[in-house]
Length: 78
Image (cartoon, rainbow, N blue to C red; front, side, top):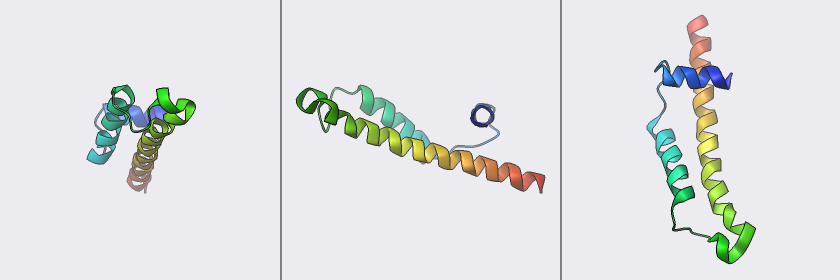
């Protein structure tokens, strides 16, 4: 199901909300940016908590988009 969703996004059959694109860009930039709210060098594994939370927010938004896409498919069939 996810593969079809990604193909629908790529083929512009489903328009992803701007907030989801911003969250994706923020997750990538924050992961690779030299600045960090909780540095891994100081707190070790606990420093990955802020990185994981940014990716978690993105994952929640991505699941929301996938559900919106599924709902639109269901509405078209009805």
